[in-house]
Image 1 (cartoon, rainbow, N blue to C red):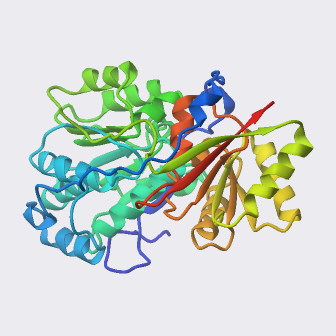
Image 2: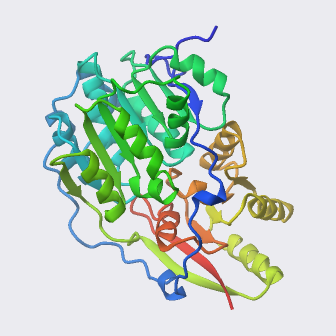
Image 3: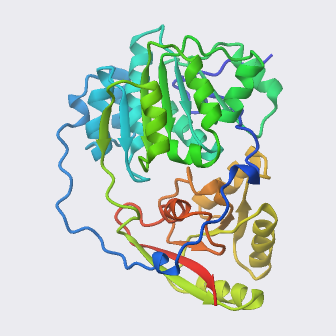
Length: 399
């Protein structure tokens, strides 16, 4: 009999683990668009404008005392721009549309008001949708820390674990569901999850979920939750597809935009010309041994090409490993943990890692294969240039 896991004071307790969205096969990915190589070239231009001066500090927010204490222990001091503007609106029950670059603290911007309401209203339930397993897991981790000691319980529904375990987890009727749209819809179709009473809904990285072909799953899920709900939509872009979802399911939302541009001003971007496979791998080798290339994320197209490149780099003496949708969730977790702890310093990945990979000290992102679209390029290079540091993005272009 499985033990019920809740947000308790123990560091070892966490959301009940149950993962997936349907397998992210190639049919969910758009065909590659032509991107002129000039769009991969841009010098880093760190912003010289004044630092953002928040209108609030966390003490100003009307938060449950337990959340306030956990935020203090987590080192939260001044809110980021998206947190400063979104949290007070969320706390009074308004629908929020947040447009923000990656790495801006948006998870806490929706997690704090959602968890605060769950702790103050025992009838409320929340469902949080994310495009990838990794992002869903990171949302769960931050929610767990913010709500530590509250006794709230939840289920994480993403791929890589057995459906049987997920069925057992859902029998506890958790008040928080975090997962990818495909797997959540699977459970709805199997009648193992009823979301009619869920009155808090979060869609994180809406644009990416639409890119991955989840529009029908998202629409069906939103049609099944409580009509009297509060909704949070977070996205890096606000195109017509995203607007369509918002306009269909929300009235009079508050729009908050803190996006500074298409790409980070802290990322120095350039191209690398190559001619032939042997030339390409040798150039990559030379880049990886340069001073200053301390932690590198390398993107390639397919499961097979990622495995092959990772093995080649390991054979050349690099501390390299790989991550892609063909690996089980425990395997992916182990690799990411090694990368975060610098047990490896080269991670070769498919675009599954372009969103949701939160490693603050990546110095280089290398596009060994061209991205599917310019938006994918933006999300790839957003993994570097964080915390005020200069990062480097190099894109291989065949002569």
